Length: 141
Image (cartoon, rainbow, N blue to C red):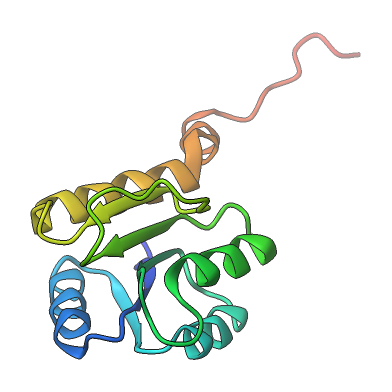
């Protein structure tokens, strides 16, 4: 039985970065929904089926932190990664689960963060449900 693919919402106003990220994620087996505007990404998120969000920080209109805040308001357990090309550390109020400064991490780091966030989102409950046999009632008259 194949496990269903996870869908990642990628948002970046830089088309080259967006395209690169899409290719990298799709070759690892993820479905990718790409958007260059935060408003369009939020509308897509509202239709459901998104497992994780990767967004650029600085974008015209709805920026990354605002997008993440709007998503977390609707779905607090959806993991979100905030990426910046200009800021090396981000100490402002953000609801992002992970902050990555572009150029300060390898693509493998992003893939590992995504994997870990999706495992955490799924949680140990499902693993427990799969491996736990149904209880048998013994000695009930």
